[in-house]
Image (cartoon, rainbow, N blue to C red; front, top):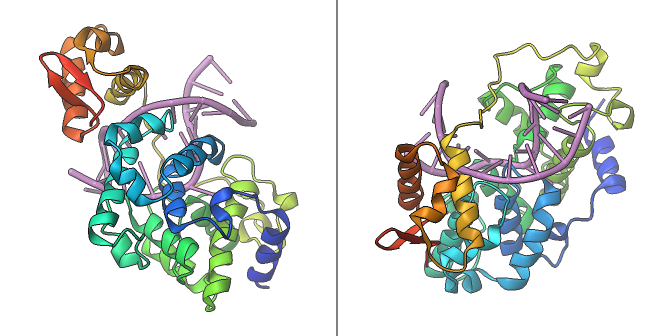
Amino acid sequence: MDLHQPILQWYADHRRDLPWRHDDCSPWGVLVSEVMLQQTPVARVLPVWLEWMERWPTPGDLALAPAGDAVRAWGRLGYPRRALRLHQCATAIVEHHDGQVPTTEATLLTLPGVGAYTAAAVACFAHGERTVVVDTNVRRVQARTVSGVALPAPSLSRAETDLAAELVPADPATARVWNVAVMELGALVCTARSPRCTDCPVADLCVWRRAGRPPYDGPPRRSQGWEGTDRQVRGAMMAVLRAADGAVTLADLAPACPDDELRRMRCLDGLVSDGLVEPVALGRYRLPA
DNA sequence: GAACCGTGGTC
DNA sequence: TGACCAAGGTT
């Protein structure tokens, strides 16, 4: 009647061989992977992570590079502000942490782009700290196996965090495996769309499955729009800037939003104030130096 | 708390 | 086909 042994055994048998899980992966490699994996699937992260690690094996290496290089090397992972924040992480680590990725959650939280999840994940996976890692996979596995509902609510609740905390084993080394094992189960078996309950090590214990897998019955989960959003325009502009060698002109950026100059300029201003774009001369822009 | 922030794959 | 989703964070 306990989730732990079956899930830990399942993980030992089915876990993916991902480079950031290797024993010889540095804390920096773990941090980079966790930021890249925010809202981005493993398959797309893999090649970019490998390139980053080869190019910038330590925070010091990235800190020496122009921020724009990080943004360009980010490629099409999406949410390019993450690349900028990773560059800011590198600078902060060099300046304030002797070039070493911080080990405690509290200190990790002070880094740009590092929130509750990433701080807990890095402290645990990179440094072996016993933390409570709660991501979308953990939330979904808990929602089904323990709470008996199809999906977690749109926002993380205190009750979920408390439950996750109770489930984390006391021994730090076991806690580390547990945290990654639950995430892996959510990623490979207990998936959002079509859960593969026949492959699940805790199917017999799962409250949701025992109840006949009732459909989601909670507050509506709004999906974000895309057509006609600023995000679409910003993305198109960043694609132009990544592809360019140096600076581009306003005319080069116009196709990103051909029918609305006002919005086009607003989006460009937004990118500049975000630090993703740098004005260099009259009407010329480039990725930040 | 709600809105915003990219991109591409999936069923 | 298109809505939904992916190891979230910031404002």
